[in-house]
Amino acid sequence: MKENDKTIKVSKLKNGTVIDHLKPGTAIKALHVLGIEGGNAISIGMYFESEKMGKKDILKIENKELKPHEVNKIALISPNATLSIIENYEVKKKRRAYLPDVIEGIVKCGNPNCITNYENIRTKFYVIKVSNGEIKLRCHYCERVFKKDEVELI
Amino acid sequence: MGNITEKSFKGKDLVSIRDLSKEEILFILNYAKKFENYRGNLLSGKILATIFYEPSTRTRLSFESSMLSLGGKVLGFSSSSSSSVSKGESLWDTVKTVEGYADIIVIRHPLEGAARLASEASSIPVINGGDGANQHPTQTLLDLYTISKVREGLDNFKIGFLGDLKYGRTVHSLVQALLNFDCDFYFISPEVLSLPLGFKEEIRAEGKSFVETENLLDVLSQLDILYVTRIQRERFPDPMEYEKVKNVYIITPDILKDVKKDLKILHPMPRVNEILKEVDKLPYAEYFNQSKNGVTIRKALISLLLGVTL
Image 1 (cartoon, one colour):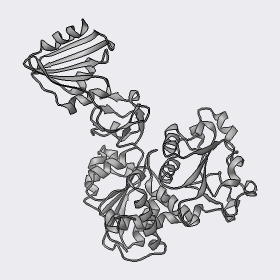
Image 2: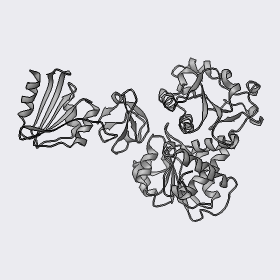
Image 3: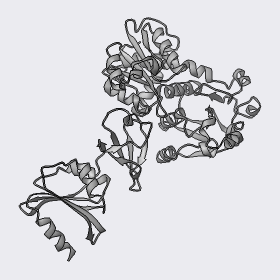
Image 4: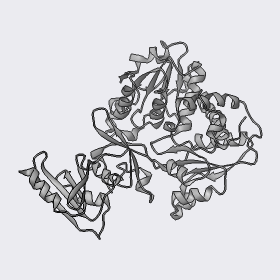
């Protein structure tokens, strides 16, 4: 049973955060976006079998409780990602990543003529949720609107 | 008009027309009327800094004229080669320096978003005098002021935009601003220079429709306002394409024979050949008045942002 497999994998972590249901191939990017460096043991699983998704990536970060707003950044690269906070082998909290209204410092503006590509400043984008569920981002500086897949992560 | 008063604008910046609500736009247009013929000492002792990283005739001179008409003084530079930028100074640092020399800043910059960044660096008001292809809000306000003056309001009229609707930032900002009002849009351009999809979506999202055509004569007789823009040769990937369309969008006295009596032609200027000089003397020509309105609206804005009002 796949669900049991997942439970076992999750429960192996004593304390920390599991980010599951990442789009296959995005785990390393997700780590980068979260800006987690050194200190905590991190397990990266890529291209795991998933009943729902076919394949998925998974991240386990030991002894660190990620805050929802930190994980929300992940929604940009992997909208279905879930976050589980593990305490003493138990899932204490579980929720889905949710794209925030404003994204700062993680996306590079795709407009080559935008000031953010010249001056040393933190980028800032407004998330526009179009009625058909599509996500667009508007640069706070140059005001250009991009589809989610038209922008690069920093 | 809600709670908007002259004081609502004190100390603020004007970076994008998006930053203004319909009520604020109407307030500014109404307030500007007081400045039509004003010359005096309202802003005596105040200094306007014009930091222009690319050349501009109309915008810089009309800001300077506005400040001088209000009794203030101006300083600044008009190209990046005559400033510290040529020594590699960041925009942020230039603005932080200039804020110590003046009471209000106007910036023009070839990069989009530069004015927003300047407004974040500065503790004194910043007015965007054009940031690349993005925004030029005082142009939009003077366009709105001109339309409201000739139409006695901003509702119930048909406006046609002609020429380069793809890259023309004045068109984009004016369309955005007019979405607040009740008017009909006609977009007339060669297909390669048509209005970007995003703007069409914005219009539809407001529940409005528009007419799009390549042929001016299809719609000209229905229009109350014709907003002409220049078609630049360098916008065409294929010079043959340019040759095909370059004369189709030239306004001559001849093609104006069947237009509405009170049609007004606007143009953000400078024009090259898209409106023949012979049109200037016809009652339809409004573009030089429009340029002049730029001084009126800029006087009003400087006064509001500095919080020293008439």
